[in-house]
Length: 388
Figure 1 (spheres, one colour):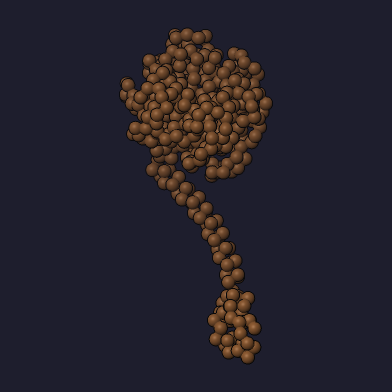
Figure 2 (figure 1 turned 90 degrees about the vertical axis):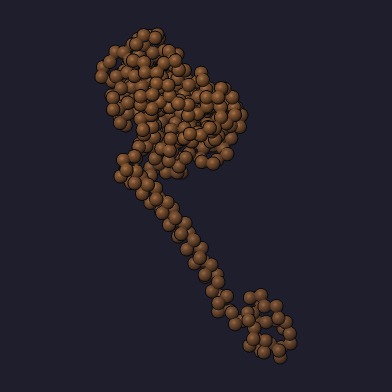
């Protein structure tokens, strides 16, 4: 005979006349009322764990919003230049919309020629560094033609000319543009008050990209000296904040730094062009940390291929224009490979294709804009999840 609690793993066996006495003292049988409740308890525990996970997500969201509110109270809630805040799992449309240009290469007011850097002012006006047209063009949303606001007087080094400008931002306080005039090896300030010429504010620099932080410090990539410098108000030389140790692939070196992004913590993210990687330099660091690519030249998801425009969101996710793979990649914090956000369907001019993408920016809603350098247009990829 076996015990009636054999279903509860009681291993007793014996004679029939011994069964009653065993059951009277069988621990398993005595625990049957409790053990029978275990499946129900397990189900309840699983439900509680799921509820706790959902609660934790809500708590994380509240913590994030509290931090935003705290920064607003302290007057420091400046979203970094060209960035936005959106859901950590945000996605974008596969097919882009042509917002600017797209009428072939040319110098008409509805055309671009190899656009590089982008800037969006007050969510209304785009400023485009129209590289091969030697000009900066302002384009109001919804309009078919742009307006020349700097340069446009042929290639040259006069005060009213530009020579392959690569980037532009708006200094709102002084109502002017700040322009990387690369082949003239200068940074130019150009008033937006119907000015016909600019003034050189930094000279003898092979500038390619610039940005500004919440302290109004200016950061500029110098492709000739393989470094990024920061200029605080009143400084004449600037301070090296990334690279500056000659061209190379060590973590304290850069090799042709093209684009730069600065986050709220004043960490500098640099597109290290010939090293096929994006490197993060925290404030006062002596060397960087690879946050995208760094696995040699190529088009696998673990690689970057001549990186261009770079932006970092509030989660530490890096977005980079992978110029020679004709795509925009998204590298989440700590990831060993990226995901394709835009392009990645070969070099071409279809809505789901890019051709050597350069500058990037997000609007306040999280829509992504790409300077589609080789297609002479600016593409918009709309966000398909809600912003946080």
